[in-house]
Image 1 (cartoon, one colour):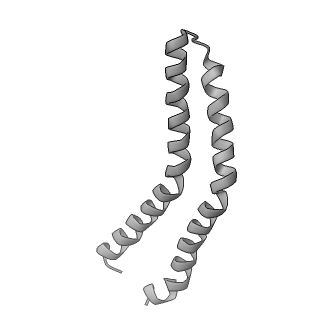
Image 2 (tube, helix red, strand yellow):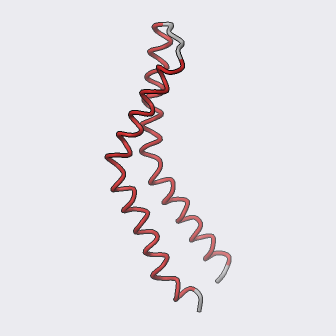
Image 3 (spheres, helix red, strand yellow):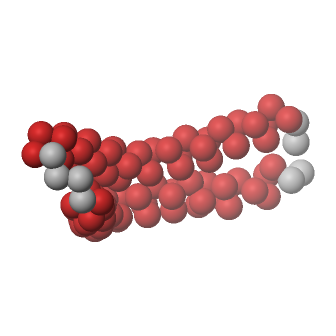
Length: 89
C-alpha cells in the first residue's frame, strides 16, 4: 500500500463524512440564524428560545435524512470491506 492509496481512502472517508453530516448541519444553521434574527428584531435574549427549535429541527432532519445517511455510510463501509482482501496483497 502506497501513501497515495492510503490518502485516497482517507479523502474518500472525509468526503463521505461531510456528505452525510452537511444536510443536518445546514438545517440547524439556517434555523439558528433565523431564530437569531427574530431575537434581534424583538430584542428577546432568552437562550432557550434558540436552543429548543434547533434541537427539534435537527431531530426532524435526522428522522427524514437518517435512512439516506445510513445508506451512504453503509455503502462506503461495504466498499472498504469488499476491497480489503485485494488491498492487503
